[in-house]
Length: 250
Ligand SMILES: [Zn+2]
Image 1: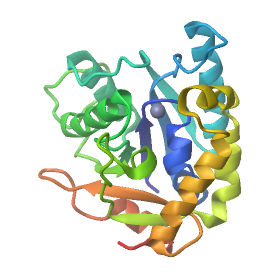
Image 2 (image 1 turned 90 degrees about the vertical axis):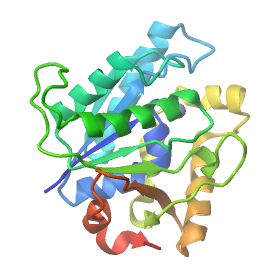
Image 3 (image 1 turned 180 degrees about the vertical axis):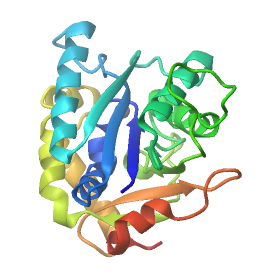
């Protein structure tokens, strides 16, 4: 069985972009850990940052439990995620603690600075984790660089509106009800996305997105991924092999 670490910026990002895939991996007996860089404490007009962060971590715990995994928050500030020395060491220590075979993170190009920063941090922590002389804490260095995958960006586009490439889709039709239930755990975000994003309902937004990815791959509902294969990262299709016949267009 494999261990998969999914790391994104805020509670709810993973649910929208990879929740179905993570649920399928857990159902197949793999260990999944969902982690966020921040508690998403900026995401409220009703509560102060401390209360918002507390609520959103509770929501993320509940969502991860529905997927069959654990949740961990790195505690970086919302809108304050940067690819700097201390942050890279913290993400590397997380990798050394979880010891994943596969890391799934956000797209390096996306609409939100935290999304782009955590993607770079995850990429660089994968490289750093096996370097024994790179000191991060108590967990021992990894044996090798984990296989690294990027989710789609939100809306599948970079900040200039250009469509981003992906390698394959995962048919998540069989677990879509759980994906919906996971996202519904993020109750605090319903009012926020109306205010900040002009989106009338997080669930409807997620379903429209998952259906549009599905249409790209000839299925009803899908999630898209790209494997990072540049040297010296693993080129073998590790995640695709774990997902088997759910993979489309690889
Ligand atoms: Zn986000």
